[in-house]
Image (cartoon, rainbow, N blue to C red; front, top):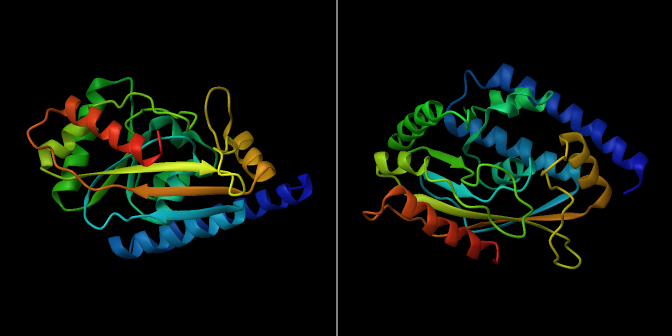
Length: 243
C-alpha cells in the first residue's frame, strides 16, 4: 500500500476509534451483555476492514468458559472480538495507550499488574466470578507477545480461576499470514522495540494480512493442578497454530 493510502487509512482508523468511544459512552450503560458484544464485534469487523486484514475463523466458542490464546500483537484482541467477542484480561500498561487505551477500558477489559502476585490473585478472583456466572473471559497465558513462530511458556496463575469456578477452558490459536504465500506475516508483530503506531503503519504498508482464529475443543481440569493444565493447554494451542 502506498504511503498516502496508508496515511488515509490511519485517519479513517482514528475516526473509527472515536466512533467506538462514542458508542461506549452513549450505548453501553443501557445495553445488556449480548448487545454490548454485538456492538464490539461489529466495530472490530469494521476496523479489520479499514486495516486491510482478512479474517478467517475455524470453530467457535459456543459456551462460557476461559479462552486461552497465543499472543502476537495488539491486533489479537481485535481479531478475537471480530470472531467471537469476549471479555479480556490485559496488562495494566495498555490503559496508557493513546485513545485505544480508553477504548479497551470502556469495553470492560480486566487489567493486571503482572509484577504483583497480590494483584494476580485479585484478578484470579474476578475471573472466577465471571466464569461462575457462565461468562467468557479470554487470557494470554504467555504474558507477553511473541513472534508468532512459536510459543512462550504458559503462566499457570490464571488457570486457577477456571479450577475455582469449575469452568471449561477453550484453546484458541491465532495466526497472521500472507494470503498469497501462506507464510507467517510479521507485519502486525508487536515485540521488542515495536511501538503501537509503528506496528499499525507496518500492517498497512506490508498488507494484505490474513488473520486466522482457530478454536479447539474445550477441556475441564480433570484433577490436574494449574501447572499441569497450563502445560497441556500450551500443547493444544501449539497444535492449533501448526507448531
